[in-house]
Image 1 (cartoon, rainbow, N blue to C red):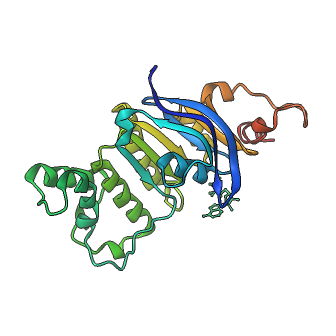
Image 2 (tube, rainbow, N blue to C red; image 1 turned 90 degrees about the horizontal axis):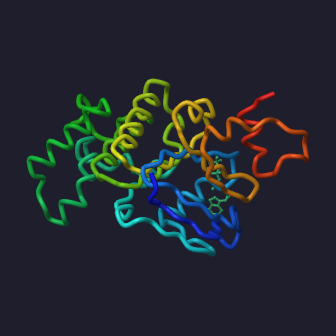
Image 3 (cartoon, protein in one colour; image 1 turned 180 degrees about the vertical axis):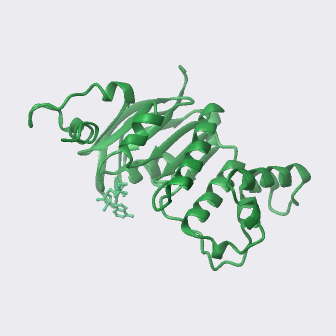
Length: 244
Ligand SMILES: Nc1ncnc2c1ncn2[C@@H]1O[C@H](COP(=O)(O)OP(=O)(O)OP(=O)(O)O)[C@@H](O)[C@H]1O
């Protein structure tokens, strides 16, 4: 894993002139599975949105590898208007738009991919139902199914497990693992430190205005140190990984 999917050089990210994270310099190896962690309000979503190109970097340079132009971004809150009268099938099928063109028709291979995505997310039986009747967890499965069809090389997922139950979380985590096994680069914002320990090889920690990429195994060797001794940027991780 030597090539970089993503390189940030002195990047500052924030809103309306307010900087949330600054001087971010890091390189994400292609195919890495990265947990983006940190306390509430630290700037995880802001940084992810900046990487996704939804928010311009305030300063610095952000470079994505060529294949990472195929990028899938799942924002934290589902912005889908569930009153919009489309079926679950049609919602998921939107993931094929990139191949379809404006007035294209779904071809058999596309229908097969849509059926597979519905099956892998456990939504086949709900395919003909209106999107508006789905529960929060089912809607998240549908968003994953749609994402699956985009065939993205770089996946940016902002708190995909928020508000979902354990079986759904496990099912979605299995999909992320599969994307990783396929060589895709995955950045996932999450708060479950135990899950990070078990399933993520890298941590992008965002805390105290800083962000850094560290192998999870290395973080686990961090030991609690007297207050004032540890660098500020490790404080959250130290506390999270070594609870009192
Ligand atoms: N659209 C916005 N306009 C202005 N400020 C914003 C906007 N979105 C977020 N912020 C501010 O940016 C800072 C970082 O917020 P962000 O949502 O990136 O944090 P986070 O680490 O993702 O938090 P959480 O874990 O609670 O989701 C916060 O102070 C927040 O108030």
